[in-house]
Image (cartoon, rainbow, N blue to C red):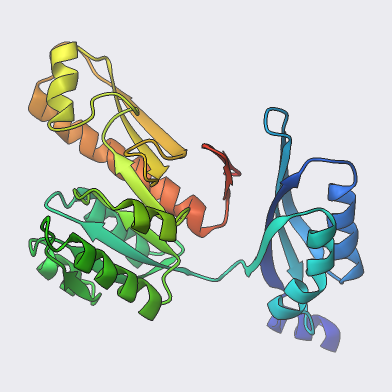
Length: 294
């Protein structure tokens, strides 16, 4: 093996992800690919979508580059292209693990699932903390050596509780908050401050079966499909842009308790995929909808 080959094997090219959205017009793909070529980068994978309804164009490019290219240099040099096409864009290192906060109340199946997936490397995230309005899962979280914050919430302390959550987000450099069955309605102000950065799991196909005991409601209606919806949180309760949905077919002889058990698994699957795709920069907001380059 030559010295050059040995050096290349020892120092593989760095991996990056570019995501962008902008008004759709001619020349966007050419401008992006030409920029990457001229910068000494190599495109590994590229996905794009032009929405005729909104007139917007969306793109995700996974590319590689060797030193002296850095993410800072890429961001600085791409800015001119971004400005010329009125792009909303980001460039990140592909191996960068997103820092997240998980929030939970008294149903722990999604929390447990996300903790385990992160531990085994199935999710590209670092869980900075777990926040709960109850103490039920403090021991579970502690077993993963992750900080647990008990923040009780009442009608009178809601604003203080949300202020404390925002402190944790800022102090820990958190990019994503995941409501892993956190059963408190977030204020409009918090939703706006963390817009596009909060994912929730809803135990049905939205907007069906809202409120208490959704699986019991589904049983009364004789449903044949159990579903769960992962979506971004907005000020409109359970109406945020949908990221992922999962279903499981059921029959007439399934009891409400069996529906709950099936639903737990469906919720975990949908939420885990949504968190993974967000952490991998695969989701772009498109008004009340999402573009998911899965």
